[in-house]
Amino acid sequence: MKIALSQRVFYHKGRAYDAIEHAWYSYLKNHTLTYIPNTLEQNFQQLAQELDAFIITGGDDSAIRRTTELKLARAMIIEQKPVVGICHGCFLLVDILGGKIVQAENHMDTEHDVVYFGQRYQVNSYHSLAIDKLHNSAKILATNYEGHTEAWIDGNLAGIVWHPERMLEPWIPSEIQNLLKV
Image 1 (tube, rainbow, N blue to C red):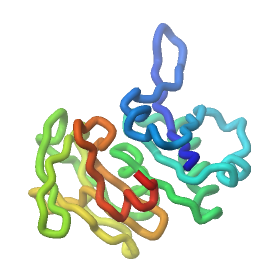
Image 2: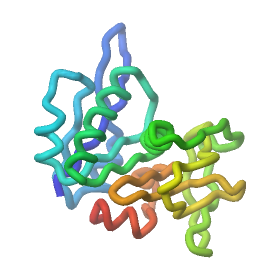
Image 3: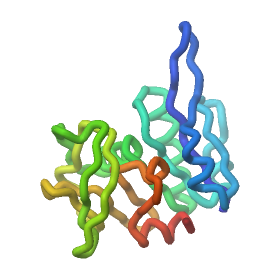
C-alpha cells in the first residue's frame, strides 16, 4: 500500500521544519510511505487519488498542520479511502466529526490497559486528553479503565489514542489493521 503520513511542525532557531517519528519506518516497513509537507500549495485531490491510505500521526498541533491534515482527509474521504488518526490525529478526527474531548489525568508518558472485546492489552499513553463521546455512527473498539474510548472505527475512518509505532510489539484492533493491512 502507498500510505501517507502527516508530519508535526518542529521549530528550531526561528525556522519551521516538518518532522516524522522514525518508529514509523519500521512499523510500516512493508508499505510505500510518503510524507505530507505542511503546506497548502499541493493538489490534495490528486494526492488522494494516488494514495491507498492516510495516517494522521501524533505530535503537537499547529494551524498549518491541522489545515493540511484536514484538506487531505477530506479528499481521502471523497475517494472512499482509509484515514486513520493516531493520538493527535485521533483527537482531531473526533473533534471535527462532532465528538467530545476532555482533559485526562495521568495519561502522559505512561502505560495502561485497554479492553478490546473482553481482552486486555497494554498500550502507551503520551497525551493529556480523552475521548468522552464519539459521533453517532462510530463504533467503539477499545476503552480504558476510566471508560473513555481508546480506539474506534466508522467505515474507512478510524482512530487510536495510543502510539502503536512506539510499542515493542505493536498492537491495534484488527478492524483498523484491515484498513492499513498491517
